[in-house]
Image 1: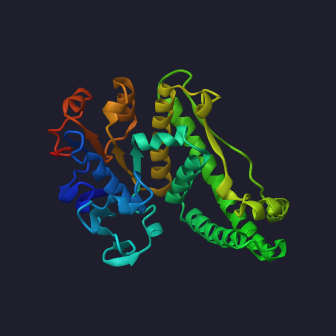
Image 2: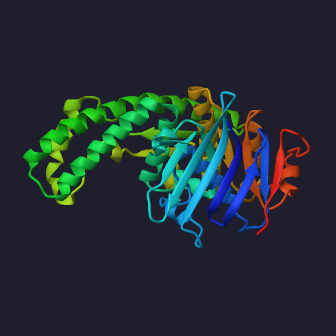
Length: 355
């Protein structure tokens, strides 16, 4: 999988920008404020239907415009595919694949990307919900079955929560408890299998990093396996749920923690350990997606050399396989050359942006 071209109209600071990418290493360089990260954001948007910078896509519309449009040309199994994302201030977003309107979830897994950026550090430093969202996104990328199970569960959860907000009785919740428990079983069953596979890649990538003692592990609590167990938990929590007006039992409350050398990273990790852990998690994500889907993700590396020291930056590049489309943002080309990236290679490309 690779992106060949992107066009952005009124997207962030890009009033009208069109870029063509190579299948190898693409270096987007320029001063801070020239819109480098916005290009990665636009590619990510076409891959997942959402931004990594904001939960409100409306914020990506140029302040002087009423709508934004992002269009990408991808190569899929040697065929070209056009994905278009439009958002206006007055109307809902529109997503099209080859001029056919689709939903955002239809993008997930089609043209996968792996993003390494400062925003992703919340995976190790953020709240449990940040890690849950990251893992849900990852599992949905490699498994359409998981995506469907999670979508069905989320729909039922919204209905139950809506009922809780009207302060109905315990009896009126029973019909939704039955449905929610059944949907939860399916989500947890799929998640358990996918989690075990991801843990394997995390372990293998930790070994290949080349530093003795460096290991990153993912730990989660065991979820109920039977529908009747979940029904019992929902029953025990019903008074609390009615009081708080939200559901407190189910996959949407799952916790997950990363451990670095057998210590809880969120609580005890140093700044350097958080950086190393994020690199290993992202490289495991890359290997996991490629193995499970047969698609090679496009790597989006935002300001890589400014965020990491020379050795850690090299570790990222050394662990990447050849023939991987990589898009790197940087303020200049000096670090690029120091790391041995040959921009004279016809497979690679540099793109200069000016403020």
